[in-house]
Length: 280
Image 1 (cartoon, rainbow, N blue to C red):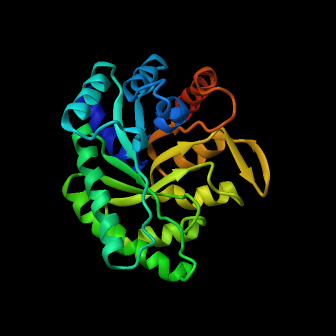
Image 2: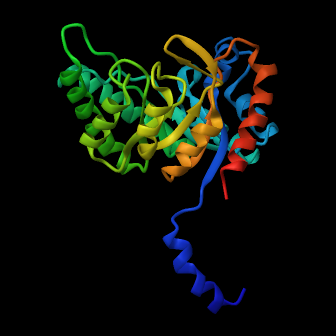
């Protein structure tokens, strides 16, 4: 195409908005039993992802043997040599802490993992809001989360790392609450890590509410709605994401009963097909 012709088409293309782009990935948590028992290493998870034609991995850090530079550099090298992005890490946090020593401890913990993410080349960290204390309430506790997230985001932003607050029960049990928290923090370095299997009622309606604020998406094989377990509708999830201009990773977080090593490859084939169908 001649440059003049391309330029004449460009305004219309930009006006239409960004083209859909979904990338298949895997959460290391899918191999939690294998990682905990040391049957697999994190390097094995990366190589497994490459063998199954995935673009990225979200490394749940619970079983990291070290956070020293030598270990992190080794993982980064393995990922690069296998053509897999370590685009995210996932950590445990409980941000329902009133201002003071406990809240400061949470903030310091997030900062520690921001440094780890930066060294690995990950641009995102999945965090939890935590549980509302018995002597508090949702309104008060959500304010505490806003405070912790806001303070942590200042450091995360200085390192180019986004904090993705997951819908993970507790204070983030409802989509409306987690969206409210993120809006109140009001930082470009705080958004939502959408987990499609964590809602227990009005699953897809709540996913749709979160979709405009999602920067990472973890998909489950099943959903549990009003006590009834069924297969997750990944096409429906993808449609909601694309409609809300989401561009990024769909990471399988496998939690079903069948053996992970034998079951996951089949689910990844399905995930790749979904990503292809809903990407331009």
